[in-house]
Image (cartoon, rainbow over all chains, first blue to last red):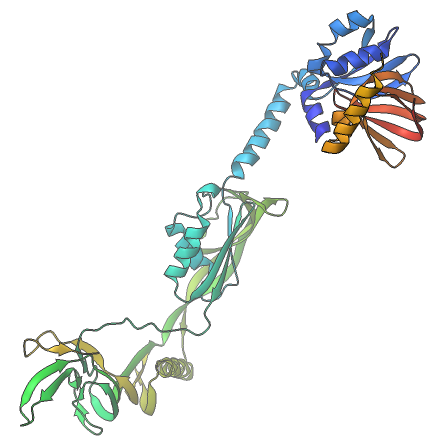
Amino acid sequence: MVKFIRLFRGYVRIRIAGPVPQRFLNLCSVHDISLWNIVAGDGAYEMNVSVADFFRLKPMAIKTKTKVVLLEKRGLPFHMQKWKKRKVFIGGFLFCVLGIYLVSMFLWDIRLVNEGRLTQEMLLSFLQDQGVGYGSLKREVDIDRVEKALRDEYPFIIWTSCKMEGTRLFVYVKENEQSVEERPVQNEPCNLLATVSGNVVSIITRNGVPKVKPGDEVKKGDVLVGGEVPVYNDDETIKEYMYVRSDADVRLETELKYHKTLKLDYQKKVYTGQEKAAYYVRVYKNSFSSAKIPDYEQYDIVTDLKQGKLLNDFYLPIYYGKIKYQEYRYDDFVYTQSEGEALLNYEFEKFCETLQQKGVQIVEKNVKIEKNGRTLRARGKILVEMSDGEPEIISEMKQTGEKNIE
Amino acid sequence: MRKPKLFEDAKNHITDTLKLPKDLAKGEALIGLTGREEVYIENYKGILECTSEAVMIATGRCRVRIVGKNLKVSYYTNDEMKVEGILSQILFL
């Protein structure tokens, strides 16, 4: 470090010779002039002294009758003299250093480590809303705020950690593997209504007054469980009403209608085999390609890009790689009846799976596929057993001074 | 001119009693060795001789002569100096 500072400030190698050179050395020491690498030889001494101190040697040299000879100049100030003739080179070098310094102040890469339900695209879009994205000033990125906002925005994230390395931002997240459905806590008294028509299979009431019993037929909008609980006097007259938030497990058997049509004529994307490749460079938002965009009517663009970097973590806003334009057109095709039926069956199975994932139990399926001209139609009914009961807040209460209980 | 013995004794006594560092109280030189290749010296008065075979330094109470081969003074400031080379003897004269 000391050597670097000396080189930066500049120093000279001198030779001193005289009747008492030791006295010269001692005087330098007294006057706080640092000397180093003192080597004796041939009745003279050679040593290094800083440029600033060199100009202070004259009085001591006169006093001790010592002759000082300059042997060599070393360090940055002397090189600067040489470099005066190479202004463009020095300018370019300084410009490059300045450029790298400026580029290093921004964020050029965001990576999500352990991608799960939160994907890279979701993260980038979310961070963009938070004002953090490619090209953001690093010092303006508040990592603590980003971590907190991520946890607040996505309830399934239980732990986040952001780390800035060079010009990259790493986002580590840990997701809750068991999704917890959060029910908003509400205390308003309410009834439970049927959202579909059907027959009651079972009813388990935890809070409220059941208005139906297994085997009853209900229509959409009927009250399944009432939140108005009467309190009786000794003579069995109603004293008052208590209003509660109804809570029950009600299973209804109901019919769902299924309808899906498929046109046998369809269009499909077919690649013509015509393609054009080019080299591609993108600097921040400006892109350059080694070839013009081909005059295909319809084409896909396939890019294979790499991000430029210095060392390991210093990512630059430069992307380079190959770009390929692939021409395609839409051709007309016709499904055969068996293909169409297989496709409709597949979609019906998917629909049933979705229902089952929602907790709906399928009792009976009655769906038929029929051909009608150039279309195939899947139509029918599915008998299902499902949980039901939609809360409806009780707005009008019958008595004043009613009590609300949980 | 040497100081009277009585004064010297009193000074030694006070220094020992108060447990003062001797380099401060008596102006003794501090000499540190690193193997046989480096020697650091503090609290000196000046260089009396400097060749590649010997370096003689004046300290408050005596002269120190460092003898060796290829000796050179790595740095020489008002407070501290370092001599490098292959040391063979350190003499107090």
